[in-house]
Image (cartoon, rainbow, N blue to C red):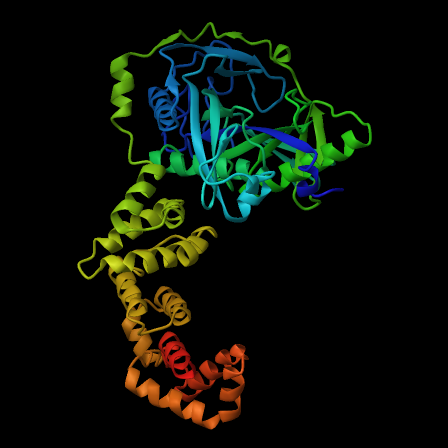
Length: 521
């Protein structure tokens, strides 16, 4: 099978996402008063409404409507004042009433967009991106110095209720295939669920991953969901088709269902792109179907033939009156909008002199963004601390956060972090030692300066003292000095190493390097 890079030489991928997000910050379900609680004993939060018992009538959750309008405003959507709920025919056992209450073609939020900053290795997936110069625009992308910006349209964000949770026993990886029995937990049935549908504007798996990551940042900033992909409160369906480069006609799409990690979204789409290319190049046919990404086997497998809109038999729900949102309601919700990630990144760049890359990655986690501001608000913080502080947060703290670790400000306080950055900025410790001190602070609950003293980490930065060391090393190695001056400049590393050895690893390597360059000139 070809790689995506090889496939993209002849084929263009057309990708659209359907992103599902549970409104986990609410107290109750969408149409009843049952409590929302992940991990509760199975079937303990149910009632006649979410079980679909005869005679039960739904009552809409006003807070859920506020949340989806907030989500729409944050993603540049038009808010539809007049809309309604529909019944969608649903034959699976995870919806006991045999239909799902959802919205039709006109949702609460319509015609939105998000801009994606794609840079570094992620930008390399885009076909022929190097043919564009910074500032050049092509289709929905604009070239930048670091990569490009992709403008992605949002068709709608509609509200619906989530289904119950099915647990399959005896099959591989919890799948129904090969299972001996299936259990059902109706606690999740009726959970308020937003579904965001993009336009088919994405062209690479990296763009799809970046869109979902950015959407998660926005919704976390709004405080409407915990966006936990591990617990299923955020998940995506990826639709992908191929067409020959230069063609405008869409190919037949397949759907990857219930993707629950950024890596799986990228890898699943990448595999499906390569699979479809292989089928088409061999003269085969792509069928419209729903497929499952198996991360252990690293392939997609068929789940079912994809339904069409007619299969759902949708019609207006007779138990729910149409909605008429007032201007006053919409503006009240708008007033609740917090500072969003893009605006925060722009402010960080302007206020603290950070580069666009650092500012953007700093706001990827709300915890790192908030902690950065708290550190820069410390009395001992200096303007020149912003860059090294951002580096530590992006490269070290964010990596821990990605594993589920939580930042405990009682241990790693802003004051301690500023103290550590001060040690780095003054060259009292090296960057490698800084990482060691950070780990020790988290593990031992001690101040950075105390750790540096205890471990004898303080660097020697006295120019006179280090100059004597440099002179001694050069005097002891006259043959290598001559070789260096003869063109073997790689020997500089040898001299630095000898100086560091002479200072027992405590010499300032940057100062030593500069002294050597000056004396060997």
